[in-house]
Image 1 (cartoon, each protein chain N blue to C red):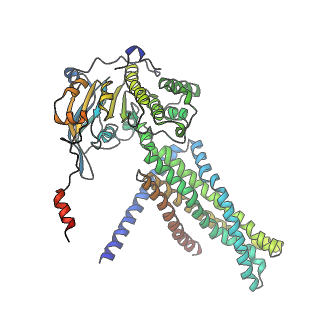
Image 2 (cartoon, rainbow over the protein chains, first blue to last red):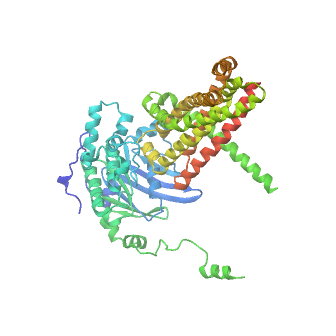
Image 3 (tube, each protein chain N blue to C red):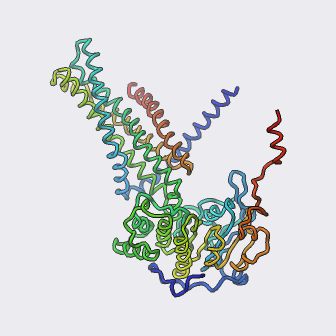
Length: 299
Length: 256
């Protein structure tokens, strides 16, 4: 199901393509390869409600790492922690060797220039055209001649198949197109790390297939490290080198896609097979049902 | 006891918000030198806040001036000094009605547009996306909007006052047949630079306050449809109250 290697030749940026990392599927490779993101014993709470409690995770450079988990487990929050948009309460997050808990100001912005992020809804700037959205980071960070900016933007739009939509406004795009434009914008500065927040949610099968192929192809052609947050197990398994499953604020399983799918752990079994009840309960915590009914009906 | 407690809590919240707004203003002012070189962004926002508010400002100015002409004529005629209509209209428009009514209209048109635009940018992750692109959203999205609105407000107040005087002249001279020479010469003799100065200071202060409230509320809006709606409402209400309160303070200061 993985897109063929020979097809992985979208237009690259000014930097020469980096070679693809060796296969990361085996546990040995996962543990021994250099990590670009390392999270140890992460603790984070919102309004005293714990989101993460002792989460450990490492993302190997050069691969596609998929982080799975039911809705509300804090997958998007994890991306924001990696991107330094929110601060962890405890533990360590290292991105490219930098400690995200202490990084601030210009140093944080310098690190973010090495990162790209694809938001769930694309987050395109609605007052700018598709072309200007992709050109936005270049105009903000690089003093390039207009001709070069045009070439780079068209190159990235060609890579995501939307060069013909350059003059459209974000309101004129479908959900899938908006995400592809956002992807072009995310790679225009040739980042080392690309973060994807639920890139497949709400897409039709064709757009879903296009985005999946793009994630893998761009990762390989540009030599990126991709971190994909999703709850689409089967789809993301086709492009992943490594998968992590989160539940209850910590990682409950990790390994290659095959290992995750073969896992006998109840929580993994429930998640992969979409079972309504199990270690992740169907019912939100509540007092005894009959007791509450009787209490309400009492005069 | 509960009432006292509630009043105390509201007062504490108001003071906290005032402090937060002051800090927000200081952050904006610190970023102004970095944002100014991007003149095109500021000019775009002057257009959005200023040029797009022109029609409502000009129409309102004309009607306010016309009402002023009518009321003033009726009152002054009783004392046989209808020729004073020019100075009465110009003085009240320059010192009070121009800055105050423009600020109220500005808060309703440009202020709500600013707050809802920024609020929607928050709700649709556009500001988060800027952060992840290593672009400071305060510098790129908030400061140009703030500067544009601060520049536009005194210009709109000047236009409002000018059109208002024309409206008063239209009623007083054209309709009520006040002597045209007396209307204009009394105005020239009765209005001095101090009155113009007062109007300029008031419109600048109101512009700063209305713009600050609009960008603060928009930037801190909850990322939901309800949050954006609340931010827009708070912008109008807070701006109106602050403009009237500050108008009293500034008028007292100028009179003393």
